[in-house]
Length: 539
Ligand code: NAP
Image 1 (cartoon, rainbow, N blue to C red):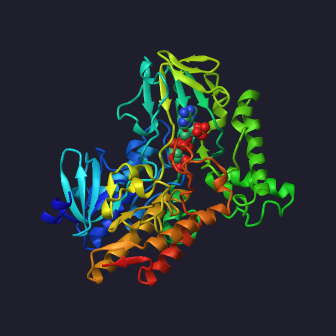
Image 2 (image 1 turned 120 degrees about the vertical axis):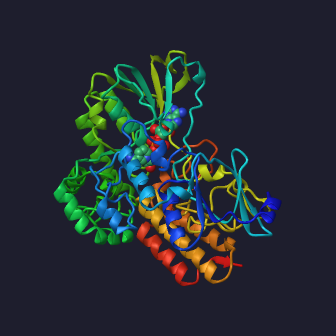
Image 3 (image 1 turned 180 degrees about the vertical axis):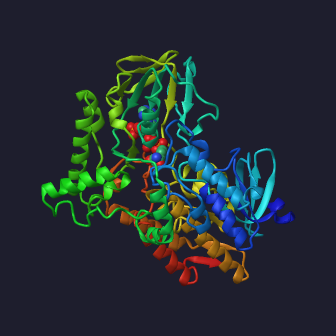
């Protein structure tokens, strides 16, 4: 491929991999900055995670009007969200609208599976190899491949013996799936499994939820957005976005959150705060007090409150026990956000199968067998999670300088300067990569932040008359150490979460996202930029 890159003309200044929120905005920004760019995506449509995750009940748990692009005021004024938390079909329609509105589709190549990306050191070019034999050569590559885009696939013994239907949540078919009256088993109780549960319980004849580790789930308190709310929101959208950019989460949080320690206030006052935030709804519950994610005693008060809520909702004591046997502090695995999840267990057609001490042994022709029993099923749905943050990058066949591959480079865990670039891989950028706030925040705001910054560094390189940009190894190492060090000051690393890679056997354990928050990260990015992109070399 090296010879090919030398012989061939450049196809584009930038190849972008991924046509989700990140890739589409990257294309828009690069075009506006005068670069030629092309987006590649294996899917048959734009949308990234929202293209693939079309399982029943799929919706976002960041409020719709925050989980949307802020770069165009006309767009945010014209588009009207119907619900506080948007469903997958509505988000996908929005992304498709953006692609059309900004004329992006003409530079998006769909059905394009990337098999490899190889850097030609002599000519400072990347060659991208696609399934089917096509090769594209570019100066830069931006990996907009998503943090949760490689589903963890089932590897249960006997899987191929099953006579019924099987579905993977992240690869849900495009045709309607008929579940009504059927015996359905769901394996997995993360955000996906919980959303599937409430949706499928309405339809299935019988629903068995195979539950291994309890996750905290918080009520969404979803609602339709009425005209008055929307008018008010739109009249202040810009201020809302300005504020969002300075916050930890990438969206403004309600004023009912306390900035005190949970231990500084009386029991009654603490309960009032928890009750108010619970009623308000959404993931902000984990910020009810200032120290819930840093102080185990403070966290225990919040965990206790949620346990109490679950016990008051779920009628069956054994189900309560299974749902509340938490092995981690609240918020140290990503909390789920639901509409009626715990209530679902009171339905006569729904049961929880606790596979914590009675693990799934195999899939049989008729269903699922655990160590102590067998469950006959017509349909099995796997909601097993993702090889998060690094999965898509590691399987992309990326080879940098000196023939070093990314899997070799990251064999002890990911390392990337600002989550955006890696030494030894010049001219390659990652949007919301490991070491950036990404999945701990509102992804769309985090994407815009990274995309704007990547565009800035490419413009800077062009102004300098160079076309080779590389993160310095020492700076990258210091940043990666800093990311781990500030995570260690919190409770986050105490949990076996996908944030640490613990959900994938053999994956190195490193807390991957930057816990400092979106606003603080912006200050770091601004600082690096105003110092002439300190920590990068240009040649
Ligand atoms: P997840 O949180 O990693 O949950 C995967 C589930 O599968 C866990 O309950 C896990 O149990 C279970 N599991 C995996 N292998 C298993 C096995 N061999 N036997 C039994 N159980 C097994 O994955 P997810 O639910 O897809 O969510 C991932 C992330 O995607 C979320 O945290 C969120 O960031 C994002 N997401 C967001 C939304 C939203 O915005 N509303 C919706 C869906 C997903 P163990 O914990 O015991 O391993």
